[in-house]
Length: 304
Figure (cartoon, rainbow, N blue to C red):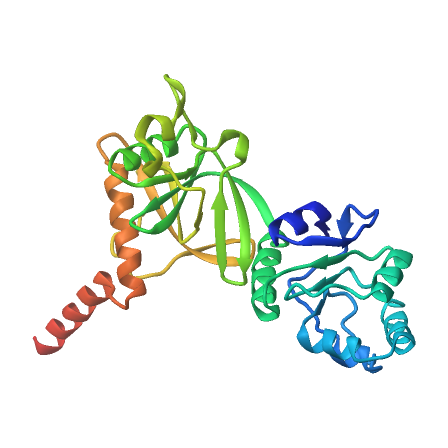
C-alpha cells in the first residue's frame, strides 16, 4: 500500500479525478500499459499494477467514436485497478473521468515522457515499498564504504564513530539505524528523522555532529557494505589473524561481509575500521593481502 499524497508528491503528479481514497493498493514497483486490454484482450491483464497511458494508448482511444470509447473504457474500469496515469500531458476524455469517478479510481496526469515516467516511478516505488527494519547500531561512511558498527551498549560504537568523523569521514546514523532492503543484494541505512545527526557520548551527553563538524561530516543515507562487530577482548577466544576466510552476517536475507573487532585499552578502533574499509575495497577489486601472502608461502615451500 502507498499513501495517496506520497504517490502524488513523490512523482509530481496532477490529480485529474478526485477520489476518497487515502491509500493506493500498490504492492510492487511494476506498471502496465494497457494497449491490448483497451483493444479487448483481457486474458493476461496485470490488474494489480498502476495503468499507464501514453501516446499509443491515447491515440487509439481518441481515434474511436464517443460510444466506442465509452464501451472500451467501461470494460477497462470493470477491473479493480489501483490508478491510471496519463503521461506526456495528455488530458483525459470525459468518458474516462466519468467512469473513474463511478468506480472511485484515481486518475493522475504527468508531463513526463512515458518511458521516463515509468523509470522514475519504478525507482520511487522500489524505495517506498522496500522491506524495512530498525537496528541498534552506528552507520558511517568510511572512504565510500558504508560501515555498520554493531555491539553491546557501552562497548564504544559512538566513540569509534566520533573519532572517524574527526578524521574526515561521515556519520549517517548513531544508536538507531533504519535499514531498507533496496533489492536482493543491497541494503541502505539512514537515521530516524527525530534523532538525525545527533550522537550520544557517555559523560558528555547529546551532541549535534552537523553543527559541530559541519555539513560535510554527515550523510542522509548510505549503502551498508560491511558490518564490524565490537566486543570486549576475550583472552580465551581465538581471533582471526590472517583473514583467509570470508565471514558474513545476514541482514534481511542479504549477506553482508562481517568482521569481529575485540576492544581493549590501547587499540585505536578508528584506524582499524579505516583499514577494514580500504581492505574491503581492495578485495572488491580482486586483491586480497591474505591470499597473496598465502600464495607466496606456498611457492616458497614448493621451491624449497
